[in-house]
Image (cartoon, rainbow, N blue to C red; front, side, top):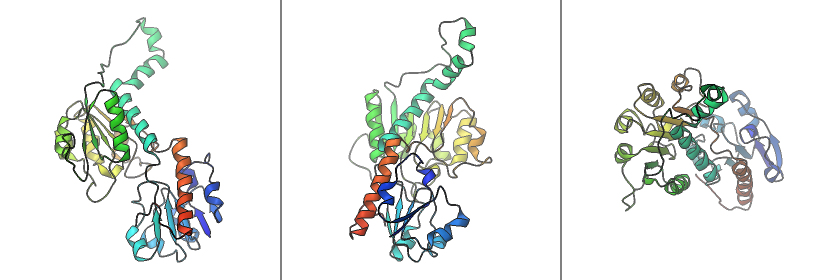
Length: 315
């Protein structure tokens, strides 16, 4: 079995990949650009990847490809329609990063809510010592207790964030693709209007593309904190930028972007230095424990495929 790991650097050089490499003749590449992809995939039977895009044009050059293992829960970088029509199995890893994403999401909210970076910088640059004052009370911040925390996307990650929010004393409301008979399950407009904090955890698909745009930002409270830990395409990035620049929201956090890394002409380049903005480089999923788990789970997906079994198949 010829296995190719196309972008191990995006999983991490510190992670042991022997659970995968022990299963066949394995080639491992730090990264793979578009020019290299056609050559590297042509003899591959099992493709292991994280961020690499496998379009129809690429997949047509892979006559031996039998299985694609995505080191992620999302698989919008794979042309699953082509795979389905051409007998290529696709397997993802659901739930591996739940604790990691939830922790980073909550940390981002707390950072924005408490202005922690501003206070930390005040001490680090010597201003605290020079001030002669025992404390500093500006910028003003508020308790998390009693706030309404709106969650868009109520899968494993959304539910874990909800658990943490409730532990802080927040009222949780949520929106999900398939509504349930629960007073806390609300439509998206109601969530935007009533939430003090909004965190986004839904997948990117045709129904969620630019789900949060101009109209939804207009519904939000002026001091709302909104954090996107899902996919960059779930909100309109230009409208998010405008909401910050026009002081129509209290704070914005984001770990995901429509282009990664985002280029110099990306809307967020204009707001990346704002005190009420916290941007991170798509790291929410990437605790050591989560990355170790994703490798082990992909190995189990490959083993199942070799036995003729279906495991974590998405096609």
